[in-house]
Length: 158
Image (tube, rainbow, N blue to C red):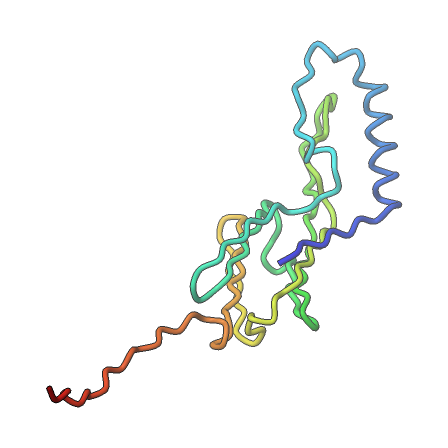
């Protein structure tokens, strides 16, 4: 399964501009600087773990702050796409904002499915900001145990 990430170049440029402008205004606060994980400065993309079990493949995506009704999962040809939006909630008025690190907006992740997945049986669940997509394997892709039969042997004469 291959992850395909699409980034809007315009949004990336706007993000870089915002980051640079923020540095200009935050320079007086460098003494209060906390290390920022690289993911906090990139476009909003949910992190996804992929697990394979004998009967299914599971995708587990972190989508904190995203309402389940704001997530759309589609399968077209052999591509599974997860789209959604993380809305920015109005914060209480503060006298001064020192930093914005949380990301908001639309996201999209696409995964190429192997032909061994049965697209008609895909299921998705959501719990506490974690989206789990279960991709059942087609019967032909599951391992089958083949029983060895014993045939009657003729006695050898001496």
